[in-house]
Length: 166
Image (tube, rainbow, N blue to C red; front, top):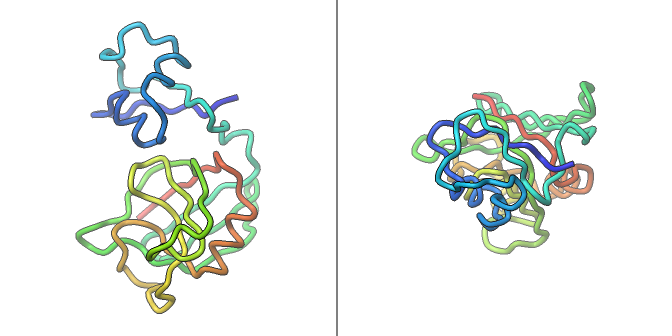
């Protein structure tokens, strides 16, 4: 079963497709949408290729203020990791997202692993600057030590729910 996305105010099929990195036509086809210009807040949109988070045992809770990422299996805490978050001008977005892909060794400042969130331009990734962990220094992404992000990526599947709170 595919992930179901609840349309939020201001979203369009194009913005949803961009957030999930899929073609708009895939959304139209998967949801039998007659008029792509007519969607409504609260409408449930099936996202092809992304598993339904309710079928996944794991979830991630990010606390921006505590600068922690907690991995849970069902309701049990598996492990809590220290993180870096977005600085004031580039705040980490809050809300519910899902991991939509993983890219080992993405290069640049992203360390040894990149996991995209269902919000364009945001993800959970490693770092080539371990001294930044615990600080508000990123452009909104969630930064982890490379060994921690590798461990997390080895456990959580695509479709894992990520809840980010201030």
